[in-house]
Amino acid sequence: MIVLGIETSCDETSASVIDNGRIASNIIHSQKAHVEFGGVVPELASRDHQAKIVSVVKKALEIAGISKNQIHAVAYTAGPGLMGSLLVGASFARAFAAGLNIPSIPVHHMQAHVHSLLVKENKIDLNPEFPFLCLLVSGGHTQIVLVQGFFDMEILGKTLDDAAGEAFDKTGKMLGLPYPAGPAIDQFAETGSPVFAFPVPKVPDLNFSFSGLKTSVLYFLKERLKKNPSFIKENLHDLCASVQQTIIQILMEKFSLAMLKVPCKTIGIAGGVSANSGLKKDMKRLAKKNHLTMLVPPLQLSTDNGAMIGVTGYIQLQTGKKVQEEIRTSANLPFLRYP
Ligand code: KG4
Ligand code: ZN
Image (cartoon, rainbow, N blue to C red):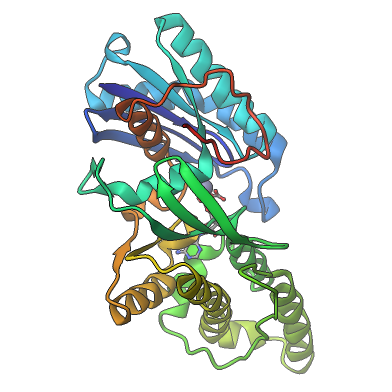
């Protein structure tokens, strides 16, 4: 069984070949056009996907040593994401599949992030232990998800405003870091101390809020820069450590609460922010303290990639779920359920 996975929901054009449960290739083109704007410009994103999709898919097939005619299905991100970007990938995938007379499989981007947790040493584990509790943290979403089956996922809590990745990116922008700022904050935080305190918001239930952090960092910097114009430069590492620590604290408080409400033997983190070394460390500590198994994706599968989309498609075919080709691309796609 060979599945081609295609991801174009935001600013990565990516394609991957899943060959009998093994990731045989995973080509990721990260768009650079957005750096000067400090955030993703949707129109530029879709144009760049259009320009790159053919060469990215070609390369994925080439590296995997697979010809078009050997593919059994094409999985693609149907949402959520930027509508124009999604449409480029979806149109390509559906046309490619139609040309080969094979099914095209619409995939939910966030469910694919969850499935990235099932990849171990480049192979998909088709017998994971359910249920598990997943902290799903990306540039557009922050959710606590109860995963009871491959396609049986329930959102227990979510952000009421910005996503955790957005909090990294927006505060990073204030610190003069290029987009996306998450990786740079992570790196500088390693050699800094969280000496600056930012408030942790009080939000009901298992929900999150990150927009207050952005505002408090903004006012804090304004005030400090008035007294010392070099304040950011002189304190960059400590500022990054402080911002990161606050984001992690907000995430960990709610996730710990979810663990009490819905005890599971396994926990996991997925999505771009799961690449964060501080968050990974704290989650591992939490798992160890509670004698739980901890799932985390391989680093190259943390941020957006075609492999996770192919993995979802592969799981769907292998677990005998009927492919719902009629599902339409949507910027706000709800979790897909397959009875
Ligand atoms: O999952 P992803 O690649 O795209 C979306 O689905 O949104 O997540 C991207 C987000 C960005 O906000 C980026 O800053 C963040 O993940 N990110 C990180 C790290 N690597 C990526 N945030 C914190 N630490 C990192 N090491
Ligand atoms: Zn993502």
